[in-house]
Length: 534
Ligand SMILES: C[S@@+](CC[C@H](N)C(=O)[O-])C[C@H]1O[C@@H](n2cnc3c(N)ncnc32)[C@H](O)[C@@H]1O
Image 1 (cartoon, helix red, strand yellow):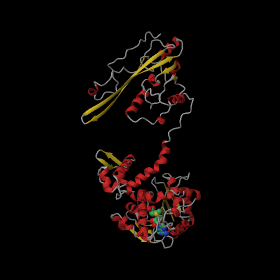
Image 2 (cartoon, protein in one colour):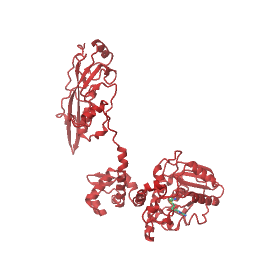
Image 3 (tube, protein in one colour):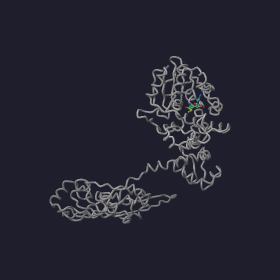
Image 4 (cartoon, protein in one colour):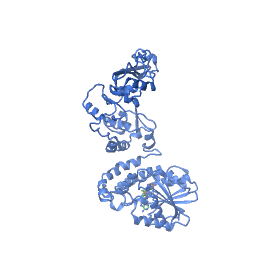
């Protein structure tokens, strides 16, 4: 058999189709490469046959107007030993399928595998493209995959292969572990478990947070604002830090996607420009500062909070127990208190801005002409409300010491005239009159009795037809809210006496206080919205 299928000599003039660009530059360097993979057959039965495949990987890089090329070339020979089948049968089989003028024409990867007893060399060579070899050459040029990432899977349809090599290994390296890997492929030893990439991300993730916090605190993103590009030395001199330390911090920021690194130096990425420059309209600088200086320490007491099931305010340095709900920030003397208060307000302001539009537009509130935001802090949500409803007047009601600092947060916009700040205590004082009351991130902070007291007070003050808008991160049926559920849940445990609730729990809570038509909207932002009618 096979006589009619004589060996075809490779056509040496043919080059791989992939090498088409800058042919002139490559002319001298291209090696002679055999034509597309060929199976050479001169009688199959029980014999070994060679499969030649050729491929060139050409690495091109340009420096100025010079094109540099590096040609990698290999001719791989793989031997296929066919089974001791009757020649006739084999011949019939071969004729029923593809012609034999290319490797894999008999379909070794599928039914044709039955004809093959053994492959010495690279199995993928027989299938056609020498994928294993290609990957090894690529790995030499670029970054090899971690050893553990290359996995060997044994498929029943693949005939026994004696050199199913690890892609990341050097050819013929015979490195330790090679035998073990082969054994693993043959299923005789256990394969190592998958590399725990995500777990390592969690274990080390806090370092990334600290890099961000430190860069913000040192105002790295501020010195690079407005498209400024600076070298590490320039930045170190501007922020008064060591050059070697600054360089490491900047490189870490670049790896984390916060900075861009070029030959000219470092510049802010779009993310940093929008959110990390301290004075920016969308800046999260205040929130990041609070996380660095307060939440970081609070979370070191997570174990105690879990053991005891209570908040850990008392553990955070300098906190005054009597100020538990007014300002969750360490307070010592009056000057520190102001600074801490301002820090807290900055954080609230940043966070509220992120969800304010979503909350303001979750329902059509155009029927209301007056609103009172209880615990309205800097007025960030009030601004979003008056922007959306130009006929709405909003009273921001908060503690005197908070409102004293609120003016610095006001944007110079015309609608500011629609917003009025009124100092007071929502437990002690009479609530301002309004058609719509707003509670944003208040209910989850308080214990059950205080929640009932506050809602009862609002219900009493609210006229029939009036409304109550609640903005909170709402748990879903599985007691998880869609975004950062565990963060909210643990933060609430660590720093409040309250808890989060599901939409149904809010409905029950508000109905119990005389509200009806309680509707819940998941906004997709950090805060969801509930609207109830009195
Ligand atoms: C978690 S912050 C929420 C701020 C704002 N509602 C928001 O969503 O950004 C709680 C706010 O309630 C205010 N607050 C706490 N106790 C209060 C009270 N008894 N009377 C009035 N406001 C109070 C705090 O000063 C603070 O501004």
